[in-house]
Length: 222
Image (cartoon, rainbow, N blue to C red; front, side, top):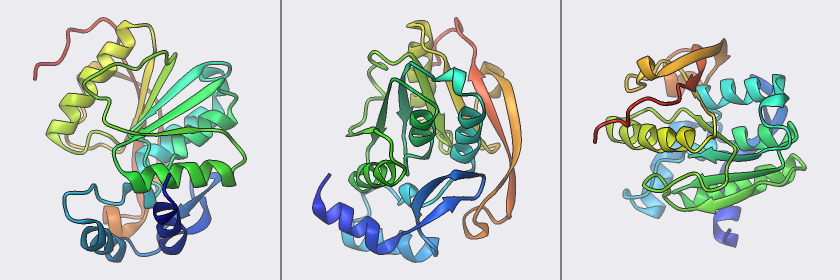
């Protein structure tokens, strides 16, 4: 975690409780469009958008579910895929996970995860890298919030999650009805009405579902 990235997160996002998971505080941006333009301008347009600066609906729902059902992660090694702000990872750590690994492809997100974990008094191992073509390592539970937002991302994530489930790690995702979620491969475990920034979602509340991937399905085609 570079000092520059940490300073950027502190400067452009303020600490506030997460609307649907107020037990957790995150560095969150007040004005999404301005920050989006700023990160593209300063860090170049080939960098990921600032997903780390917002509490997305899928992550909020999944963090709420983990908080209310700590037995899912308690005493287990957890992987939070495409962690963003670290919300789901922090919820897992607070729920008693033995360890939590949060992986991101954005250096600013890695910095945000580390800062947010520290603020919430939990340990999360924030890791920079793209692991989607590999496996979940020693993870015993895999969590992913709001990852089915594009066709290519959906294909890669699904293949990764299928490999994880075949290795014995249950995989749960939070999703607010994104177009690329392969619903036929999942079972619904919970649904919530989640408050969201209107500037991001064009609504103030999104119906958001927590899904569990069915084990033993054929691998998705590429």
